[in-house]
Image 1: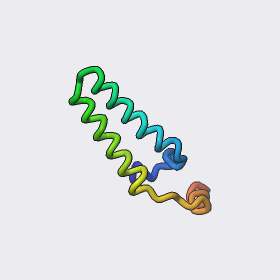
Image 2: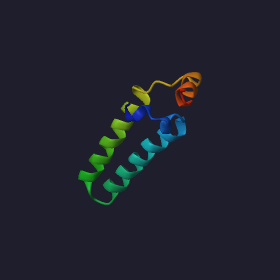
Image 3: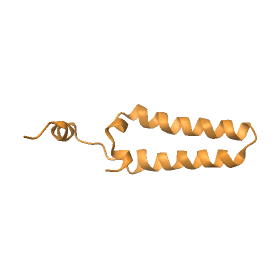
Length: 72
């Protein structure tokens, strides 16, 4: 299983929040005079955008429910 397919990231607001935190972190780093860490944080944000918005495929809710039910 890939990280972006984890059930935690199904709600859109959580994916947006992760990207926003990375972008805010990079602004803080650039403002405090540490551009190296700002670039690292921008890299995290870019990777999150790629994973959560470009590659992300929503899971069908009926399929997700059947996967979580115990099998006998």
